[in-house]
Length: 195
Image (cartoon, rainbow, N blue to C red; front, side):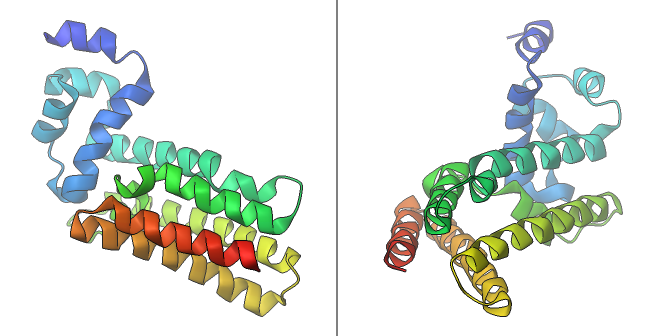
């Protein structure tokens, strides 16, 4: 497929972002070169710059916003719905599982948040991710508080739930077995369904 045909294919920015996301997830910020990114998108470097005039920093910033919106919509938005807080926690766990494709996909936010990079650009992304996770943590802690636990314990429970989800995801990715994430998330669902 030639570059012009690919440019037409990528009029939907979400599709282009998905192509680029996999490179950042696999290679981190520094390892995601323009050659790798253009190749994954099926575009020339010039065409890639047409879509992202700010280069790799703009691509990463766009992907961070894209990932935040996706995780918000699939998981964290469930916490703000009306209804029983225990049901909202179960919906959150299911939404997170959907976000990581039940252990088959990595979380771009986690990859970029922990990545030590040679340039300053990732630091901006890490700060944006940290700010977002603080807001999400507060929302999750509030949901735990609504289940009847005290504020300090609610904050601890929120940290533990995030750690368990990301731990199950990391375990699945390390072993190349998405079923490990599925088993972990099922245990969490069972635990929170019984509370």
